[in-house]
Image 1 (cartoon, rainbow, N blue to C red):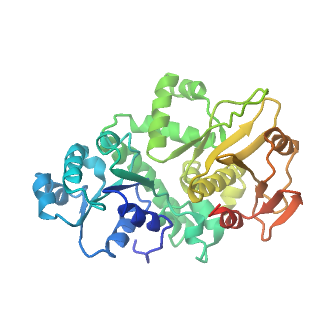
Image 2 (image 1 turned 45 degrees about the vertical axis):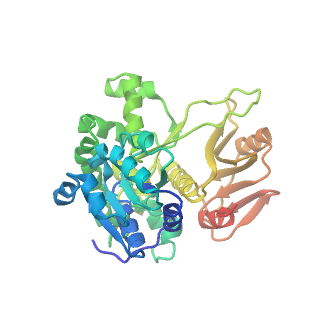
Image 3 (image 1 turned 135 degrees about the vertical axis):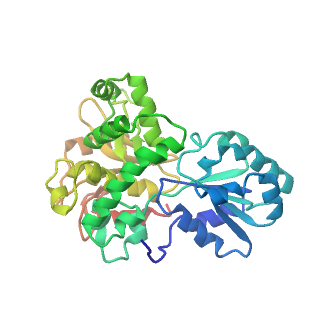
Length: 388
């Protein structure tokens, strides 16, 4: 599919990082737009070269990497899908240290630094890591599709921009199979694709719930430590998010297990067989799906803020607590145009002495429900906190 380029929020930060570091890595899931973003950035520079290491002809150019880098000295060199050539990192370090120049390499990868072997050790202090998510709502909100389409289809460009919901669903089905059968083995990881697919679907059914490794392990017939390694793999390839609990120094019994979310709402819906809005609104996961979609967009937009959930054994609970320094903001997610919050929300605000609370709901206008607590749409919340 060919689409007009949609500007990404991360573009400015990548450009700034190239002026501050010898190497910049853009990490994110496959098909999230890393290559498109990198090419848009390089087009604004006079001298650059791009290698897609999944193409044998481009990979062959690095048969003698030092000679290749010498040939293109002074250029910004982009290495796409770096996991195909992890052994190159020690050479990158040598070249970077020899030239002592900012903006030498732009590296693209579909896994966390710990999965891209050796990178975090050999390039420590020389590289900036930036994460590119699939489209956030703010990046596509000017389109005529509306937030409902972004929530249903998720943010992967080809999924979101498809002509029809059916085409979007088919793209995501293909993405899931390719991820399991090709992408994971390319990272050098040997897990039966059927086993990982079953676990992924189980996680979809537990979306927004507390992580219970033992229960998942029993269902798959493996130990809880094996389950944890599989879950970590899905996390490090940007498919899962573990939202940690907030554990303040209070004399209360607190829930200490993380919550588990599928990071892209469209992938969640495909794993659950949800193809359109009617399916979604009639599915038991709809509330948890809305919650995960809101949380993912907020954490993707508000850099510098750390996200947690809060829950006590007595039922005091907040979907999301944003923390930066000593400042805390409470967020509750409600899939209702006339949302109501329960005693658990008010009790949690009191426990944590939070005086700024927000209820994110599909409403057209913001309004207060009590001093310091506002009901608002996701877009308005993000806009009001983007630079805070």
